[in-house]
Image (cartoon, rainbow, N blue to C red; front, top):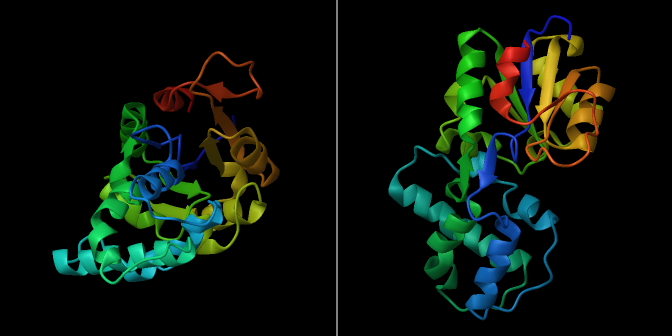
Length: 231
């Protein structure tokens, strides 16, 4: 690798993972079914639709009353988007549980991610998170404790373009103030991260946490804390 000035990291399955392993969609559908709340079929777009105002309306440091008002707002959007027949007060009754299912507390940060981020920051690298994610990922990062370890958070729901489109990588490089060839992108998706980043002109490494599958890229790491030793 030639000289690197900045690091770009994917979020889900690179820095953070779902605590229960099944993902938010399955957890939400299971919850609705367990409470006998009829709903429309699940679509991935649901999360983007219900969180499209998250960045503007939610503040992690807001008062308990303000946060609760947002949980109710989000619950109401979930019910409407999934066409759940509801009675008065249902949004309030289910709001906290739905927030636990969909909010940042259902995620945890990989231990090796903390190690890698600390080492990269100590060496002076600028860091951006670049993710195909709903609006307001920066709030998730703040509540997971990641915000102080990175300089920028670029989510597809905020910028309107998703990996592997070069546009989201270009936006990250612009925020970092660096040419693409000076930025190293690391993520777990061969198509979105490795090939997408390379097509945008970034240097790339594939994070393949499972060491068993056949290698699909020429630059692979199996743990994020391997990264600082390669720079």
